[in-house]
Image (cartoon, rainbow, N blue to C red; front, side):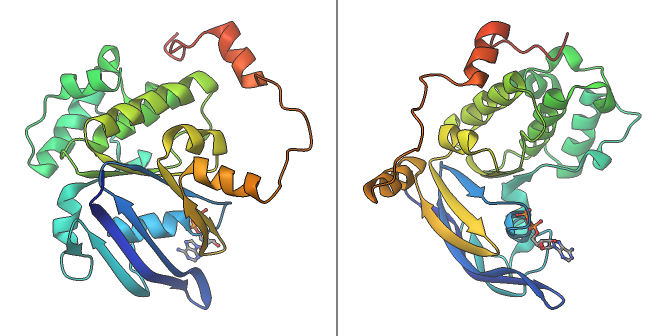
Amino acid sequence: MGKVIIKVNGLHKSYGNFEAVKGISFEVLEGEIFGLLGPNGAGKSTTLEIIETLRNKTSGEVVVDGLDLDKSPSEIKKIIGVQLQASGFYPGLNLVELINLFAGLYNEPTDALALLEKVNLKDKAKAKFKELSGGQKQRFSIATTLINKPKIIFLDEPTTGLDPQARRNLWDLILGIRAQGTTVIITTHYMDEAEVLCDRVAIIDSGKIIAIDSPSQLIDNLVATGFERPVQVKKANLEDVFINLTGYAIREEG
Ligand code: ADP
């Protein structure tokens, strides 16, 4: 880790009179999992979609792997992986056919079954997208981000609405993708998820970055101010109980 792979400088985005992103700056390092955290409406998706070349910015500078967003958007598209909206998954095609379709669009020879195996969906190769569970849908959608062998993938709230097993399963998948050298940018409003996954996070509120650091450093900074949790923290939480009782294995197939 070390080299800056994404640089965002003074980014602004207005929708009419409303300024959704108010001059934010941050850098993402190669090989890290970088989290954008914030409440609904903070400007996370807008920021991601601008970097992904899917939305126009109002002003500011974005550089992805040395490529200027204003000058080389199509070059940027080639090195990033973006989750497609479910509406892009043609209902008549099964998972293998969908991967082959996208591989054809990217002009990228792809072993569809190997890719499905990577995301633990090989036994669903002949299934249609709509027949998958929530966790399986997310895993498939993450698989599609990998087709063009991107340097960076963007995951917008990949675990929202999933049960604890499916969520932890997705964490393992994301950590595995990073372990193979891919940089990951993720948005989430699950703080436990950010703590487990993210090397660094930017906390965004009302279009501004109000903190940026590793989760551990942010917690240390808060503790250093004299902050203490008002109640004694138990050594496990209800989610631990649930996982302990129902097991860690993927259950959504059943
Ligand atoms: P987040 O991803 O953090 O929930 P968004 O980036 O989706 O936030 O939205 C930031 C703000 O911009 C919100 O107030 C939202 O209503 C507004 N917004 C997003 N997209 C549009 C749009 N296309 N037109 C007008 N306002 C928008």
